[in-house]
Structure formats: C-alpha cells, structure tokens
Length: 551
Image 1 (cartoon, one colour):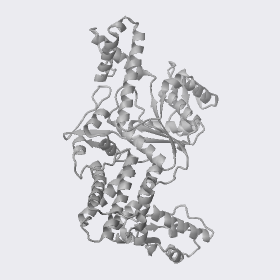
Image 2 (tube, rainbow, N blue to C red):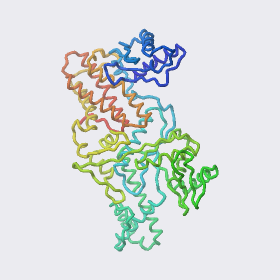
Image 3 (spheres, rainbow, N blue to C red):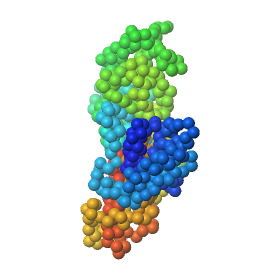
Image 4 (cartoon, helix red, strand yellow):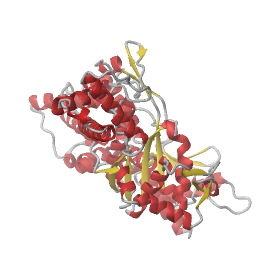
C-alpha cells in the first residue's frame, strides 16, 4: 500500500503539472514477475497522445521527470510497449516494518467507506431448526465482512431477518403438536411434509414436562399456535447461543411477522399499485418486474389472498431504504441466485439504484468425515449442526475454513484434516506462524535480548531476499484489506495471511534467528518478526479468528 500510494501520488502530481488528470484506466500494482520491479504502471499506454507519439516514448518522458523527485526509488525501467517498472530502495522497504510497529492495530487501515452507512443482513435462517454448517459459512462471511467494512471507514449495522410468517412456521407448530401428542401416548401419524429432527421431539418433551397433558384439552388450532410459539422461541434461543459461540452477534433481529402485522407489506403493495408498478390480473396482484429487466412479472398476492415471500421482501427492503442506508448487503444461499434480479428490479421500482443492493451468494458446504461426504437434509432431520462442527474442531478452525474460499465456490470441509496440527491445515499454518513469533520473542527475552525503540533500530541490517519478501508482504496488507472491502469478499484476507505465514515459515528454514552474533541484526530481525505478528493478529481478528501466543 505504501509503495502503491507513493507511485500514485507521484504520477498524479506529474499529470497535474501538465494540466492533466490520471487516466481512468491507469493501473498501479505489483507485477506478476518480481524481475519487473516492485510496482508497475501502464499509465504511458493509456494516456491521450499526439499523432505519431508512441507509448514507449511517453514512458521515457515520464521516467525522466520522475527520477529526480523520487529518492525512494532505486531504479525506473521501461519494459515492453511502454510499461514503467519501479524498484524501491531497501531503506524504503525497511521503513514499512517501522510503520507496522508504530501504527499497531491501525496498520493497514484505509478509509474506503468514508462514513457510508451500510447494513449487512446475514444468516437469516428460518427459525424452524438449528443452524447447519451452510448457515455457519454465511455467518462467518457476514461477520468478517462487517469487521472489514468497519475497519475501512464504513458505518455498519448488522441484522438477522426472521422469516416468522407463512407456511413453514405453521408446519413447525404442527410438527411440535404431533410430537407432543405422541409423547402423551396418542397414536397420531406424523405428517410427511413436517420437520422431523430430534430437536422437534426435544421441544415437545419440554412442553409435556411443563404442562403435562393439559394441551390435549385445547382446541387444535390454539394448541398448534402455542406449539409454534414455543417451538420458535426455543429454536431462536438455540440459534442465538450457537451464533454467540461462533463469535457472531447481530445488532438487530427483524421480524417478517412485524411487517405484516403493522400493515407495512400492504402499504408497500398499495404504493406499487398506485404508481403503476403493480397490476391486478386473475384475482392476483402482480409486480411489473419485466419493466426492470426481469424475465417475467412476479406475483405479490395470490388469488387466494395469501402474500408471497417476494411481497414481504419488497416491503422489508422498503423499510431498509427508509432507515437511510447507503448500501444494503444481503448474504443468501446459492439456491437464491434466481431471486437476485427480481430484488434488484424491486429496488429500482422503489426509487433506489440497483447497485445499492449487493447480494453475496454462499455456496454449499460438503462435510467430509472419514473420507466420505456426510448427507444433510434439514426437513428430514439429517444434518450436521454448526454447534456440532464447532464442538468437533473449534470456532477458529471452522471460521477460517469457511473464509478460505470465495463465497460462491463450493467448499469441502474435511473434519479430520482440520483437526490435524500440520502445515497442510491452513488455520494451523497461520496461527502457528503467530505463535512461533511469540515463542521466539519469549526466548529472546530469556536470553536478555532487549529490543530498542523501532526508530532507533538498525533496520538497514534487513537486506536479504527473505527480509525484503516479508517487508513487501507487510506493505501488501492494506491492499488486501482494501480489496476485501471493495469487493465485499473477506476471503482476500485469509489468502493474504496464508501467503504471509508461508514467507515467515520459509524465513526460518534459511536463517537461524537467535544464533547470530551481530546484535544489531538480531534486534532488527526481532522487530521485523514483531511487525509480522502484529499484522497476522490484526488479519486474524478481521476474520474473527484468535491469534494464539502458544500452540
């Protein structure tokens, strides 16, 4: 970040001196090949130019102007048709470690958000059963994204949307009622389409323990309502507890039923109808979603008077808009991909830019144990809960694995591999790097090695290829953070941490840290390692993963 920012500032100033701005398609980034310097730019190739002027000649002119005003650069080279490659001095890179040490937990912070109000709505699983590992992946992504956005200058609120109205809740109440009757000795057949998990039996058992057989004397509709209320309460208590153990805490829990009961859904539908954005046909109410790029119009209210999920979702997002968010981020399961265009259409109909709603789709998680995939089905009661997985491998491992791939990529979660303390286990690989540094610093203290103030250290001793690799990686932390924020993709942080940990582990294979006789060199290396530990700790915190001092 420091290197990229330095070049951007110099180029911007140079352009301004000629009455020009930096061309929109300008790239300033590390080249793929390290032999091409530390930072490369295509600015000479995207600049407007006079007839007959070629990019390479423009690049030479830029080089000639920059060289005298860039003492931090060791070399400027022109490559290919007009790429400009910059190589920084060792002193420049050594200063990065000092920045990391002096800035501490603020190192890598970039003000991308500039105070924009963002709502992140995630998990939002139907309160009809415990959270499974698919919900866990969405929870890890949502929580980590929230941490990243707050770190980058956004004002973030988090929300869990409760689908507590509609058919699935009636089925929950019915399932608990039937199991309660069975527990009381009644011979009642269990409906095929109801929820079958053992948790339903547990809820009904608690009802029987508290009320005996008194519910049998109630009218069936009243009994089912009572079973529904109790079932949802118990399940929600479990969801809250599971999320808390997973280090996830929502600021708001928003009820779909509250929207319906307050008349907000009908108010939104009336507005759409008044404004010509909805119409009635065959006794149903339809949204003109084809006017906004959808492949067909969508039903809002069925001919039997029942509202669709889409109607409630439009009203819910209308409510979000009224709350004044600049950006709304919804994290959904990948099976909702077809729902995205119609919700963006709804946003446009409600008077907002389509891009003010961003949807992150989370692909399925394949749970592997003993080399075989574990079959999961919520309705049938055959699934691995998030709580079970956390009990098996711990929240740290679960969160890191969930965040180790792009959200829209399928993920194989191998329980056995994650529990192994080996370098093949990514969370162990990164956490061990942090613990390894802390162990080294403890040993140094035992050997009476005193660390000077960073500003007084002889950082010029850090002149090996391994030193430079670590220093350049530290400089890249802010870039990874910014990329994660701009793309709403926290996996960039885990990728970065694995790369940094890899450089740290390789450093150990080349250099014997504590055995060197040169005290200045020893102190400089220990300060470098302290900076690496700070960054690893901060990066893990952005993922919601702990940074252990011992392993």
